Length: 321
Image (cartoon, rainbow, N blue to C red; front, side, top):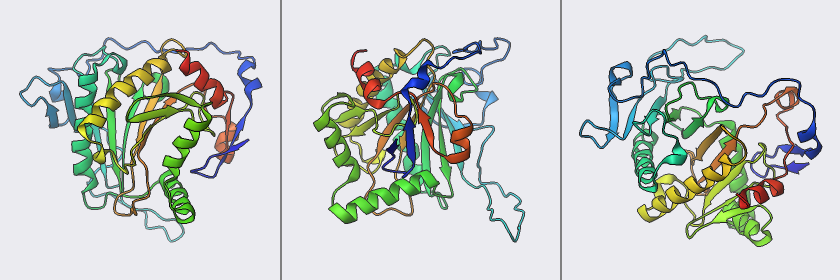
């Protein structure tokens, strides 16, 4: 059992469980319904809300941003129960879609480094706008790649959500960063990646600006983090040289994830600092979460995860692929 340094939760590693019998047929891919017109393809812009931002902006876009037509949050007036026992609030926030390629069948692992760099500049532009909106306390940029990762439309895209609360995951991480800073006057993540580099067992790769490793208490099998070597609290602080370096590095890491098995679904989560409540102690990073298996009764009932793949074994696999 290993303790997650950010959440304080325990993760149980049980490598014997990867060999347990499975009586159901595995389906790593879902056939796309060809009868449905894709709303994210060029020429179908009338099927989505109006464009907020596009690159280039001459009508023939490579990247396009618009509001989610089925938003989890928006700024419209809602109705609250006003229950004396429970707490609730209006779900006011932002939920945007970023279509990262005009090509319906192109996968992020096929993008050029230049295209990924342009995508990151679009993220920075939207992040700057959304994080400054009244009432927004946290912004999450994420990608659901593949049907097992939660994607409902096959055309490659990302989502950006600006929420009016600080999620517990981010709150716990901030507490861990703050406690470490108070005790040792150093950044927790900076010390973490230096420790990982020193022992080497969980390091996947590195370049001049970034390092990747499998976290000590990985909650997901083959989970990987990409961490900037320079201390930055937000993606907004990455300069152009670092953004291009990240583009090359992320693509390389995703190709390693693809080697786990055919049609590998995964999530990419850009872990941002909190807004309107920040004291300079956070360290920005990316989480890559391959979707192998699913949560079961123990995880749902306890919040404690069981992982059949040790991070040391995952890192060795990545280094060899």
